[in-house]
Image (cartoon, rainbow, N blue to C red; front, side, top):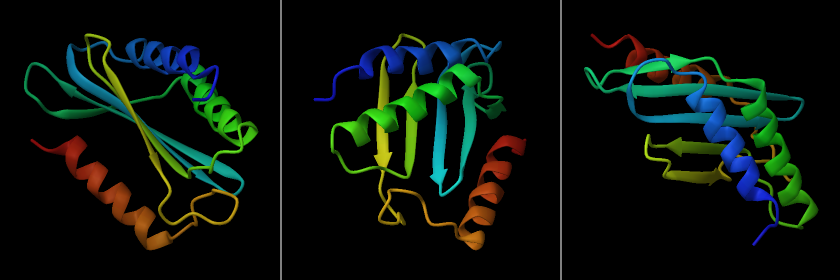
Length: 129
């Protein structure tokens, strides 16, 4: 167990709750760490119609992802290149770590085709009628 994760999970959850004005059934932030950059995506499902919508992530939540990764490194744990924080309105959450397509430093290897596919799939979800 890595000490200090719980307050950072709470920080991410609060950043999600502060970013969404609609009633939602689940919300998540995906973080992808590349060598020299990080990409964050916020997405939630509206209660009213079940449709997915995006939201701008807050710097406090982004900072918590970076701090969690730092704690992993300090604890000598393998670094993940991707992470998803999934939150439900009742406070339950799930944190998933992704190690796919990572280099020896734990950064996601940039693959332009994979990034384009990711953006296209997200765009389809967010614009579905």
